[in-house]
Image (cartoon, rainbow, N blue to C red):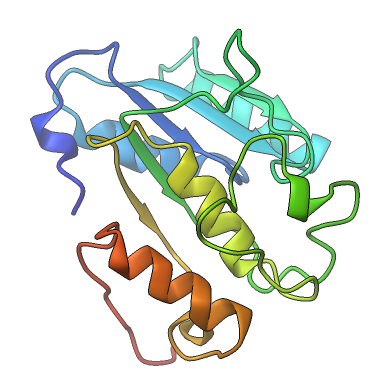
Length: 181
């Protein structure tokens, strides 16, 4: 869906901001004919350790898997303190995280993730992950696929404004909705 088969070299990067055990990253990297340079972050330290072990077992010894909360403490930043950007990204973040903003001031986010889009509601982190995801893609050429609950398509208020701003900027190329189960 995101053109991984067109990746031209191993230095092309792929990122998962909520990588869990790393299986989605591994599946995606296997689609690239020459492989990819893998980056991931996982909040739970035991699951992060599993992800690192999974990378080693599947031949991606150099995968950079870091521990921490992606929304409050992004692990991948450049020398200027901006979010690092990637050629590709995949994610299946935790659905509807209730306390996503604990530890940050979303109105004054130092990474600018919500600038021009709006701040997601404090009790629902779906759009917080989506906006972090978008900000982590290389401008104009980064491609990604993210799995989110159907509610992101229909909820109103702040989420409706964010959705409208994302669509106006042409950042979504397609939506695939699947039925339950």
